[in-house]
Length: 382
Ligand SMILES: Nc1nc2c(ncn2[C@@H]2O[C@H](COP(=O)(O)OP(=O)(O)O)[C@@H](O)[C@H]2O)c(=O)[nH]1
Ligand SMILES: *[C@@H]1O[C@H](CO)[C@@H](O)[C@H](O)[C@H]1NC(C)=O
Ligand SMILES: *[C@@H]1O[C@H](CO)[C@@H](O)[C@H](O)[C@H]1NC(C)=O
Ligand SMILES: [Mg+2]
Image (cartoon, rainbow, N blue to C red):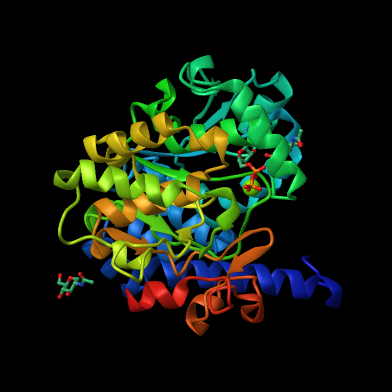
């Protein structure tokens, strides 16, 4: 005879309750509403906190199709792009783990890793192991990570020495300059990036604080957005002494490329006379690659590159991208991803909305947006 002792009763009861719950959910009218209206993906995503019960439901629903969540539904032609060194592997793994958990395990977008050297086998294995998505590893062509022939190398060496002495951040650092030039004008031309229309830039050590339950790439596509950001701030003036003058000269020579409805008021508050140093922090970007590959941005990058400021000064890719966005796009084409909780030391964007906060692990008191170095108020007023 079956004897159930008191210590066995609890697990048996729990199992029965669990099965009952499963049955209820399976036959719940809600489920059918979902399946009727949206794609199967919509239904799955609404069960975001995929505990076991939810997985089972998903499997039941998809018995015949045998599809993974990301295989059903509209997808963008998009990838993460990560410029990094082999030595940053551990910092990157931590970032990838968060990105996968918060977003990509549900969406499965591919990764493109770029490096000025070959990636090690260890790097490739330990990054690929963190995702089910495709991972691709590229070496940067020499001509995208070296002096162009019109640069006076002695003058560049001298400029770095002087900027180092002046204590300017990365002032004496040559590889940093190659990095900024590459991120300004070349990452979107790498052979591995050619096949994609949208990118999401990621760096080692950055953190993602909130669940992202929708597809930001599709959001960009459906709303005709060309550039998306989470943090905006002031640039160090000492790194870009002639960037604005060079930009003004470009605008004079190429007035035909600047649309009337632009966003220049975000970067200049005196009708273009001076730059107010505001820029979108480019360590996070979700953007349209065809905007960067287009004639306007290409003309601007070439103009800056010829002027030499990537080497004679220390022009960052963030002000370069941001000024281009302000010149060539209108405000409706630029999106502030308020719902993406994000940190790149030392600043973080933490969504203030209590409903969004429920799916985040950041402290709103540390939100950067309304501190003095932030350009959020200028964005809101623009
Ligand atoms: N392969 C490679 N990646 C680099 C190099 N320097 C910087 N990076 C990458 O470029 C990005 C920006 O560099 P980082 O040191 O974070 O600059 P910061 O964010 O401006 O302080 C990061 O993703 C780095 O991993 C380099 O010399 N080689
Ligand atoms: C779902 O479909 C029903 C009718 O089939 C419709 O009335 C309802 O508005 C739809 N809901 C959504 C969110 O599309
Ligand atoms: C240059 O900057 C990078 C960060 O981009 C840093 O890792 C590297 O150590 C710096 N090199 C020198 C020589 O300071
Ligand atoms: Mg960084």
